[in-house]
Every structure is written in C-alpha cells, then in structure tokens.
Length: 500
Image (tube, rainbow, N blue to C red):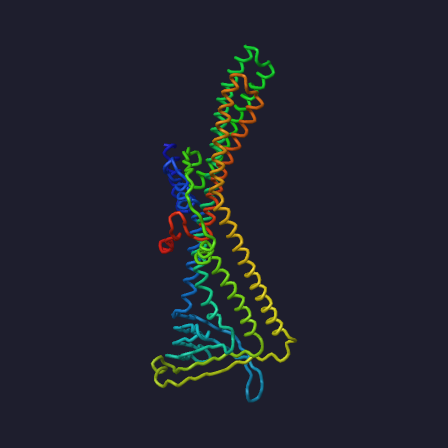
C-alpha cells in the first residue's frame, strides 16, 4: 500500500515538473556511429545553444511585427465607469470675487471609441472618435445630463520636428534582415563549437589508442629485453629502463582513457545524447579540393552576412541623431486640429437632436530666447559623434577585409599542409616500426627507440591538428559568407516554420 502511494506521488511530481517546465529537454536516442557532418547536424537540431538561437530570432520577429503594426489603423475603447464624487470644492464668485465652498455630490460615466492611424510621411496622427458621457447630480437637486460627440476628427502634427517614423522605416526592415542573417551566423558558430568538441574527442581517442598500442609494444620490448639480458647483450639497468617504460605506458593508458571519456561526455551532452553514450566517431581524412578566390569570398560576405547591413544601420542611426538634435534646436511648433459635432441634454434622445458644430484649431509654439548655446551645442555634439561613428565604420571595413583575406590565405594553404603532415606521419611510423625490429637484433638502443616513438606520436598529433585546422578554416569561411563552397549553395534557414 505504501509503495503504491509513493509510486503515485512520484508520477504526480513528474507530470508537475513537465507542466512547470522542469524537464528542459529530452535526451535523444540516435545512431552511435557518426561522422563529422552528422555530429554538426545533431548539434544544430538538439543543442541548448540552437534552441537559444531560435528563441532570440523569434523575439526579433515579434519586435519587427510590432514595428509594422504601428503603421496599421488601431481601434480602442476607453471607459470611465462609476466615477463617484462627494466633496467640497472651492469656487469663486465671478461678480463679487468671494470664495465659497460648494458641495459636489455627483457621479460620472463616459465611454469613448477611438479609430486612429499614424501618418509615416509627416509623423502626424489622425483619429476618428465618438464619445458619450452621463453625469448624475444628487445635490442640491437630482438631475441627469448627457453629453455626446457622435463623431469628431482630430489631427496632431509636429511642424519642423523630428519624424521618428521616417527614420525607423530606414532602419527597422534592415534590423530584421540582420536578425535573420545573425541567426544563420550563430548556427555556423555553433557548428564551429561542435567541431572543436568533435576533434577533442577524436584527439583523445587517438591518444588512448596510441597509449594502448605503446603499452602492447612495451610488453613485447620487455620480453625481447629479457631475451637480450639472458644473452648478455644488455645489462640489468637497461632492462629496468624498459620495465619502467612499460609501467609508465600502463599509467598513460589509464589517464588517456579518463580523458577520452571526459571529452566524449562533453560532446554527447552538447548534441543531446546521454552523457555516458559510447560514440564511434568516423574521421574522413579526404580533404576536399577547394580553392577560394578572395574577391569572390569578399563579394559573398558583403552580400550575405550581417556585416554590411549592420554598417548601414549604424550610419543611418548616426544621421538620425543629427536630425533629432537639429529638430530640437530653436523654434518648435505643434499643430492640433479637431472637427466634429456635439450635443447635450437631460435625456439621451435629446442629446442628438440639435447637434452643434465643433472646430478647434491651435498651433503651439516653443521659441527659446536665451538658452546659452545649448541647442547649438547639442547639434555640434551629435555631428561630432556621427563623424566618429563614420570613421569607426570605415576602420571596421578595413579590418573586416584584412581578416577575410587572412582567412582565405590560411584556408588555401591548409590543404598542402595536410598532405605534408600526412607524409611525415607515414615516414615516422615506418621508421619506428623498423626500429622495433632492429631493437630485437641489438642494433638499436632504447634511447634511440624512445626518440623515434616521440617523433611518431608528434607526427600523428600534427596531422590530426592540420586536418582539424582545415575544417575550422572552412567553417569560418562558411560563417563569413553564409555560403557552402563544397555544395555550391547559399546557407539558409526556414524562418517561417520557426515563428509558427
């Protein structure tokens, strides 16, 4: 009975955690034999970083939707209900000038309907309204009064002022396009992070396999050393050196196994697998024969990436700051216009019988007479900041082109470095294998054998590092251009599905 209750409580808590978001993401079950491209794809689909990137884009999408909505007509209802008032108000007699306190015992109710529209070309706002009010007076006499404005049109316009709509129409669409491109760039950055974890696992696994191989070779060397010691070709000290090497190799096997498991756990956790999953990572050593042209890479980078658009937006924002400072300097004026009909009466029907025209037009001026140069100073400061921004943008472009040129050079040179490192590894491995055979015959010392072993290990690590660098450079070019040079296609995303 107690067990059943505990099981029931655990089940309830599990579903509560799901409802409250306690289970952040499910561990996926997928193939355990993966190549580099498959690992990258899993990370783009299931990693926490990819989810965060998608949420960031969705937020940008709704921000852009809100921007576009301000240019659409809006309809709103405003109501003031049960506005009860029972107080003494201080009132002055306009004939005698005497002040008296008059009791106010009343209730007000009003209802308004607004249909408004922003005018982006002028920065003004036009609205079509209807309003109905009722006032119930309880003292000194009971009386009800209605006031209605069946329809009236109002317009508000700043004269010579800063038109925010004008500048936002220049920047907001580009900001949304930047968000799209930054999403793809962030996914490419995610791919680079995944590659680093992948090659860390590959390197750790290769180190473990080398350690195991070295341990097995050490045991055979120790057996050969015992034979040579019995023959008298080596002394006791030399045999002990071989035994020490075997023991050190045994420790290295244990340490490299822990390092391999640690790196494997990190990769599994990042791509959404259980941390203790054993993956068989396949390395494709065939480097694609791709040579990049700097001018083509630069053109694609400026056309596809977010860099050029970001430059344009920052330049436009600098001009907008100058325009705002100039608009707020000196004379400012506000035009307010209101046209419609209104009526009042003690009965609701009487309110609409004799409607009267209503026209209100006003121009509000603000003329600074003495501001001690504050307006001019703000303009000069905005102009200086805009010029600083333009200089920085120019420097950013120079640095961007130089960095891109360096990336292209590194990528084009990396293929030949991989081929050279591969040949060096093959020669180092052959030399070490030959040295192992010669050690048994007595023509190779232990010191010489250790030197060749270190050279072989260094050559293997160097080759893996060169292959890893090739793919790092390649994915760096992909991120810069948002273009896949192997498949010859632009890198895109299904944005419509993400916002549904």
